[in-house]
Image (cartoon, rainbow, N blue to C red; front, top):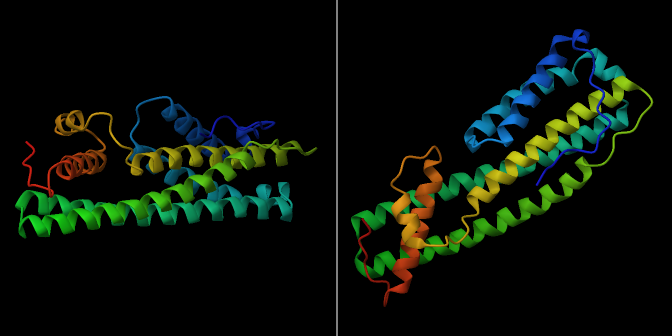
Length: 234
């Protein structure tokens, strides 16, 4: 979703401060990872390191001098919106992981008989719908932030333009990572449920995705059976 920002990029000289080069280096790494099969967890780890460096950069005297109060507030506003999305995403992921683990445990043990399993299935499907609503809200927030991120950075001060461009790039990459994460969590209906079940046993760096998709496929098979009959999926 987040493509290149339409910014007037004039990077600060690397010898101005080591942090400037450090932030640019991390930005380059994250940009490169967007074009590879790098896992979502690696992207999140890269964001953590990026924002640790950005935080130090923003507190530098040269940055404080280059940016006016209004510009700093605009940057902070974007960061706060990202924090909101991050908080919601973390909550969804935590609750979804817990729900998946509980249901998978029930499917494996087949405890409580058919009625007990049916209740577990219904509860999970209701919870999943709630998760998808929350994820849709996050997608809307990301789209609004993405449009603002693509606005042109204007200014006569080259240092100010460079700092703002760097901060916009950090926000842009954050949007791309969160877009991938939310798509990962939204669990779209698989094209072939049996294919998902077969491939879920293969090695993958995204273990939680496979587990969630496997449960989703199992539930679809269970729902297709009369009165949710117990189905053993190998």
